[in-house]
Length: 241
Image (cartoon, rainbow, N blue to C red; front, side, top):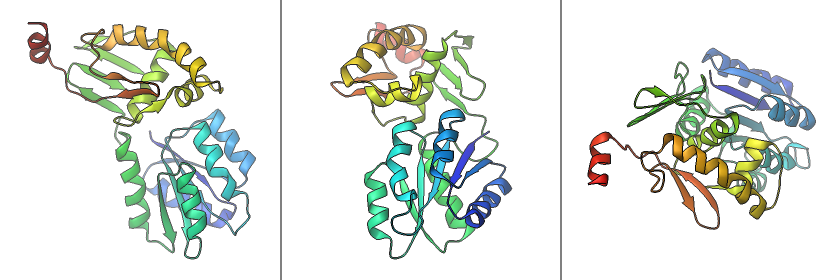
């Protein structure tokens, strides 16, 4: 089930957004303070975050960058006319999109679903199932199959795969990936070395040709990228011939 964290110092507004989301059968939690929001991000990472901006100088304006440092989940910022500078600052700090109040329920949900589609999480009822040629992944059940056969991934390997999959087509830095998977920060070089062995083992388990990966790609000097390339048996045979 897709989970959404709503952050807004105005509980009335937070409750209203939560009602809209819950009516869509989305699991929703609310935070009305910055520390509470960060605690929820650490303890129960959501699939997406909705952040409402308060008056100029309020804590919400400084929260966006901290959110992005802790999660790669889509981040929708809610503001109002006259907050253009704050909205631009939020986008520069890592927000994925913004919406202005007052807004209709339809516009709010359309914007949120657009962000969820971008990372492979669709409307409620979507089971987190990804079928990519010979590779099948169920994110919520934490199941991976190659040509129908279950693959045993370590918790770290699965979390790396989940993070990359949720950002398909978008490269993640070494540091960002380690931060999401391991929960701590380190230098880019330390992160690269830490990930190297896990990526090697993960490729051996899910790639048709681990030495020529079709899905988990290197972005030299930056990080890794998940490519949703359909690599079927016919393509594999052509590659091997």
